Amino acid sequence: MDKWSDEWKLDQLSQLRSDWNDCNRCGLSETRNLVVFGEGHPSARIMFIGEAPGEEEDEKGIPFCGASGNLFQGFLLAAGIDKNAVFVTNILGCRPPGNRDPQLVERDACLERIHKLIYLIDPLLVVPVGAIALKALAKGRDWSILEKSGSLFSSAHPFFKTPGDQNGMAVPGLVFPKVDGEKRKYCLEYDMIPIVHPAFVLRNDSFDPDTNKFSTKGWAEKTGDILKSIRSLVDDLSAEHERIYQSARRQAW
Image (tube, rainbow, N blue to C red; front, side, top):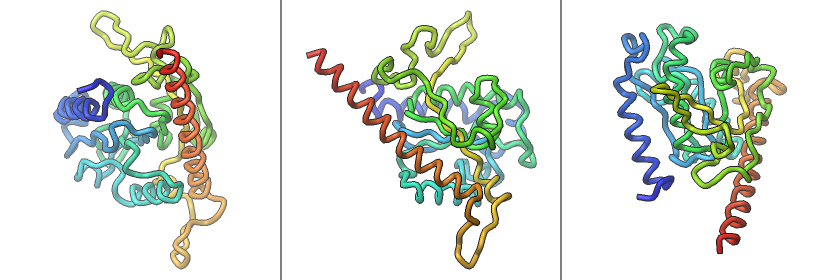
C-alpha cells in the first residue's frame, strides 16, 4: 500500500491502538476500565484533542460521549463540520479517578501517543479542547484557555511542507522524530486554535429548555463562532495546499 494513503494510515493507527490498549506507562492503568484511544478519519483535516476521559468514555472506550460529547457534536453540526471527517481524542487515554485533573507525570506519559497521532493523521489544524489540552500542547507556555480560546497559533508556511508532511517537519530543525540515543523527541509544528471544553460551557452558560438554546453572548455562542471560523480557515488552508501541490507537479513535468 502507498505510504500516506488512507489504507496505510488505518494500518498504522491500528498498530498504534494495539500498542496502547494495554498501556501501563502510569498509575492510571490500575484504575481505568478502557483505554480511550481516539476515533475518526485517518486523514482528518481537523484534529480535536480534549483533556481526559470521563466516566462514560471510560466505560465505552469512545472519546467525547455523554453530555459534553452531545454538546460537542451539536457545535460541529452548527458550524458545518462533518463529524465523520475529523479525528477526536484526549491528551490522556485513561480516566483519572473521580475525574480529577491529570497529574503532570500522567500527561507526559501519554504525549507520545498524541504526537504519533498528530504525525500519522497529519491534520491541517489541531484544536486543543480545554485548559489541560492547551497547556499540554503549548510547548511549555502557561496559556489561559479563556484568554487564548479562538486565537490562531500558526506553523511554518505550507510552501515548506511536502505531501505527507503538512506539519512542517521538512523545515530544518523541525524533524519528526528527533533521535537522541534511545530517547525519542517530538518537535511537531502545526496550526492550532484552542477552544473551551464543552463541560465548561455546560457549567457556566445558562440554558433555556423552552427554546432549547444557551444564553446569547455566552461561551456556547463564542465557541460556535470559533468553530465556524475554524471551518473557513481549514477550507482556505486546503485550497492553499492544493495550489502548492499542483504547482509542484507542473514544475516536475
